[in-house]
Length: 128
Image (cartoon, rainbow, N blue to C red; front, side, top):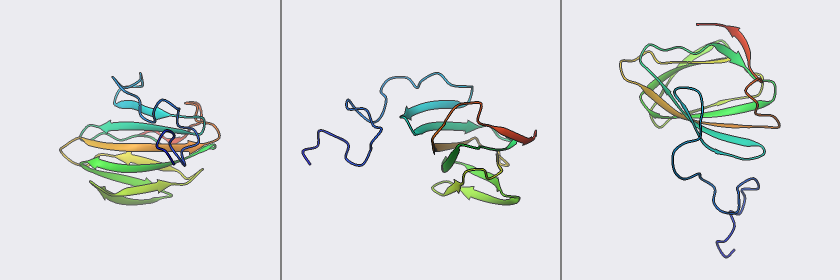
């Protein structure tokens, strides 16, 4: 391995894995950091007291790493607090929700993987 390729990263572009400059356009509170044919990496910021809808996806799984604050994650009907430095895996089709019960913003990195990553792959089960 001569360092010219990202060994093990099949979808990583040859010129580099991470995008440089400002984050790509995304909805408020979400920044697109990197993407490939079967993955997308985003930063998500949730203000104090905010709650996302209970949702699931037919074509993608997600892995969330909390990098700032404490999040309350609902996964399959069970709730748990996820603190800074901890992670949670959301399997394909599993209903999930993200909440910020604290007084400080929550920031997480979300890695989405699957055969289809379109914004229309969301089934909303319940609005906050």
